[in-house]
Amino acid sequence: MSTFGMSTRLSRLGAASALTAAAVAVPALLPATATHAAAATVSAKALSIAASKKGSPYQYGASGPSRFDCSGLTLYSFKYAGKMLPRTAAAQYNSTRHISASTRQAGDLVFFHTGSSVYHVGIYAGGDKIWHAPKTGTRVRLETIWTGSVWYGRVR
Image 1 (cartoon, helix red, strand yellow):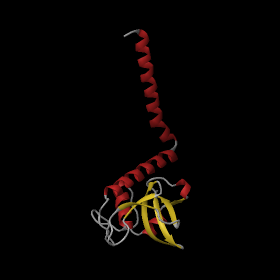
Image 2 (cartoon, helix red, strand yellow):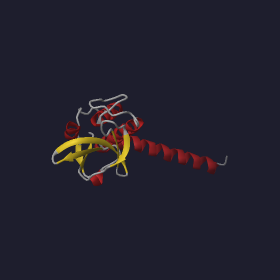
Image 3 (tube, one colour):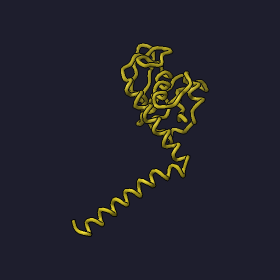
Image 4 (spheres, one colour):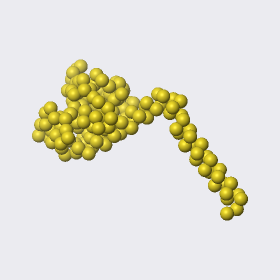
């Protein structure tokens, strides 16, 4: 290998090391960024866990591992992703950071409401779809959001 080839390879290694060091150091310097990244990872895991429960039967009051109601699915998914949520959809809404539809991301919670009463929850999957456990006689599934009467929450 020529001296030029060796120095080019070392320069690339040095650049890669510098980028790795920056990737490790920057989150420590910007705690809000690190917290946001950690929350995004938890939400992505929760979304994946909910999707893995596709086809599980709905059962009122159930929170897994093989049967779920709506808030039981979100509770189970976030629990195994590393975050605890309260048991009911309304309590889950009250425990999240409320966000606008324009800032929603995959893994955020979608709360269905009538007036000020929350009656259903699912996990946002992107593209106006949620993973949820709809009602008696159905199974966990991916479905398009069917109403505009929704609020969004991000698990902290």
